[in-house]
Length: 99
Image 1 (cartoon, helix red, strand yellow):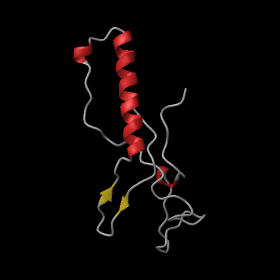
Image 2 (tube, rainbow, N blue to C red; image 1 turned 45 degrees about the horizontal axis):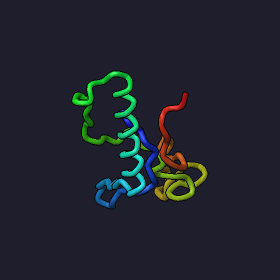
Image 3 (cartoon, rainbow, N blue to C red; image 1 turned 90 degrees about the vertical axis):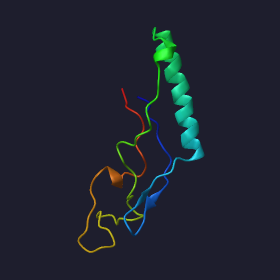
Image 4 (cartoon, rainbow, N blue to C red; image 1 turned 180 degrees about the vertical axis):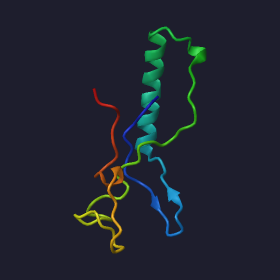
């Protein structure tokens, strides 16, 4: 698995459609990570002909409803009594796993 920290981009339309395009920097980081992962797998003994990438999937959404942008300091939206309290309130997207 390749996991990158993506740029803040995209949004949700009034109709509820989600748009989260990858930025040029996101694509660069993903390609760089894919090359590095391939090298690591080959050095570990993997047959290069068996290495493949699956379609991209998004995981761990965070930084989508940031405090100070769409939420007040109490995590309330502009809709009275509607609060958001999950990873989407983080100031930016998560990075990869930490050891």
